[in-house]
Image 1 (spheres, rainbow, N blue to C red):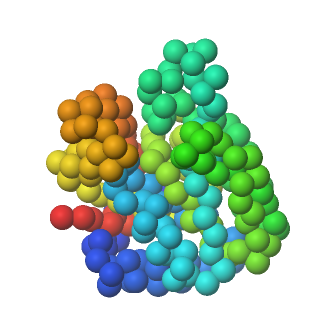
Image 2: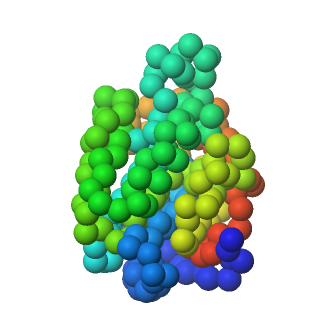
Amino acid sequence: MGDGTGRFGVTPQGIADLAIQIAAQNDGKSRRMIAIAGAPGSGKSTIVETLRNRIPQSAVVPMDGFHLDNDSLTAKGRLHRKGAPDTFGTAEMLRVLRKVAAGGAVSVPIFDRTADAVVPDGALIAPEAQIILVEGNYLLLDAAGWREMHEMWDLTVLLDVPEAELQRRLVQRWTDHGLPLQQAQDRAASNDLPNAQTVMAQSIEPDIRVQSA
């Protein structure tokens, strides 16, 4: 897959240039599957929404729609690590991705953060969508369950943010949700930051890196 030679900055111009490159992907397929991966706190959702608005006939499939439900995670003793690679239904995600890649209208699940639950059929990929932006932490992970998805990607993008900046953003995310600073730091350190380190250490080399200072 990628050689990592494509590089863009996290600036309005950098993201605009990235959108142009993604939109130019044309290998004869009716749909191109673009993996946009990055650690928690790397800005994936914001960048993907910008790309969706800039790229005609594009649609988004979020990895978060494939969270395992809380009851299942509780039974596995993994609820405290929700968001780790093994807390997603990778087989179901691969099944849905293959259906999306085949074309036509496809319903996909989304994650409702307020309810902390997956909404089945929460979004519809329109039949005219030609570029599918698949967004998530572990799309390039070199691990069982995730590795099987790599064949789906026509182009791979990794958001590359320094660990210190990720830590700052992750703590800020929890303080924005009302947690006191110490609890926010503990929450980030116990789950979010280990997940971020997994993404950056265990992902395959992407076609494109989007680098943040």
